[in-house]
Amino acid sequence: MKNYLRELAKSMQYQNIFSVTKDLKSINLFKNNSDLTNIQMTFLNYLYIYDSLYNDISRKKVSKYIMNDDIFVDSYLLWIRNKPEEKEDNNSNEMKMVNTDKINFPKR
Image (cartoon, rainbow, N blue to C red; front, side, top):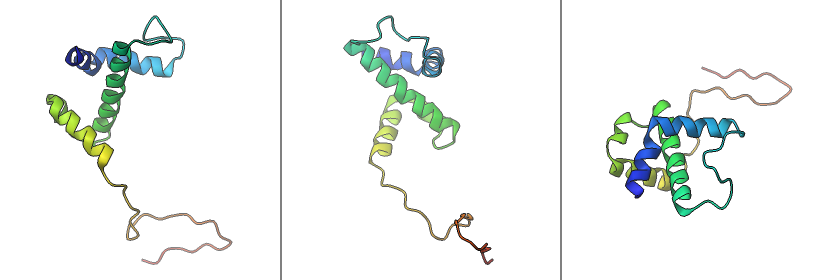
C-alpha cells in the first residue's frame, strides 16, 4: 500500500493538486478536514516529501535522477536530516551590509 501511495504522491497530478491546496485554503485535498486516517496521513507525508524534493531539484540542489529509485530518495532524505549545519564562511566574497554611521567600503 505504501508503494502505491508513494507513486501517487510522486505524480505531477497530485503534486499540482497539493500545490493548489497549499495556496488556496478553500480547496481541500480530502472530504474530511479533521480526524484523518492513517492512510491519509501517510499520503500527506509523501506529498510533503516529494514537494520538497521537487523544490530541491528545481533549485539544482540535487539531480533529477534521484527520482529514478526510491532508495535514492530515501538516502537523500536521510542525508538531509543528518547533515551537519553549514558554518558561515568568513572568506566569502559576498559583501555584507553593516548598520553604522560611516560607510566602510571593503578593501580589494
